[in-house]
Image (cartoon, rainbow, N blue to C red):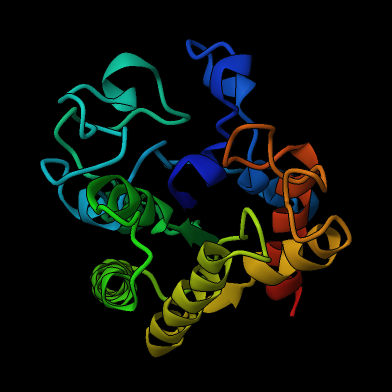
Amino acid sequence: MALGDSVPFGYRGASAEFSDPENFVGYPELVAEELGLEVMNASCPGETTASFLDITAQSNGCDNSLQSGFGYRTAYPLHVRYDALDQSQVDFAVNTLTENEDVELVTLQIGANDAFLCQQTTADRCSSPAEIQSLAQTIQGNLDTILKALRGHYHGQIVVVTYYALNYSDAFGTATQVLGNGLAQVAAANGADVADGYEAFRARATDSGGDSIAAGLVLPNDVHPTDEGQQLLADAVAAVVED
């Protein structure tokens, strides 16, 4: 079961037809194919750590955005059908884990949209140490709540996937690593493994001056992975599972 935001969803922006979720292939589908598993991808583009827990909380486009109360899940189908329009992602996950004992792996990638909201709502685009610290505390606290909810109903392997940097040579790229380290600490405290998305992209991006877009790992003028980027994330997940 895959959980999270637009990265595991496989979102590709305006280049895809939104009415058919099969047009979106993320690393969960690649991992499932490699490991011989069926995938249940419950991720939602624009999900934040807060909206993952409560759909009335601020998201970055899943159920609402800063601009409107309209979200992706309202307009377009996800990979899976939720039981109700007011069901949160954590509730869907807990219900699934309670009713289905065949889940062998759970992946979770969440938190980037919290950072994007911080950038949109602060004058300095979330660049001060105090803002980054507050952001990290919020993400870590919500992730801890999410993992505890999952662990209450599932004792198998959970893999938390950290984020790549859009540019490894700028300040926000460094902040991405700091946020990832915090996610890893919370994961470990809840008996979850970590697939290091930051390191998965670093070498290729460094060869292109630190730029993940120039390296062909992130779509041009976007924040989402290309097919190559998704494969690197899948490899990082599979390596942890194989270990």
